[in-house]
Length: 139
Image (spheres, rainbow, N blue to C red):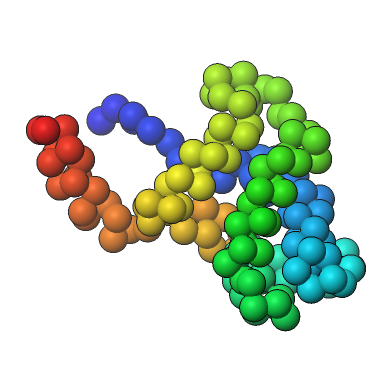
């Protein structure tokens, strides 16, 4: 059996993204609730997905916009607030934001999910993915 792909959690596992996550949450709460979010409070919430944190703790009714804004702030500040792991990005031949972007795409496609801030392959996706790929490749 030849390994053709490896999925792993880059952000939060191989890269320390905690400062970026906290900063992004702080920006969301400042913009949508007009309040400063303390680092301690943000740390207590982390472990849940960013979406869940915003849905449960944001007072504003603009939750969808706030979630979108979180990811915008996160993406725009990733290279500034996350140290580059040169060895890993060189071995992967990918920039860290590219690896993060691909994981987000897999999550959007419902192939992976986050569990305690770590990406995890959805087992049920394996059952239908083979069939879907076969259909796509035969077109």
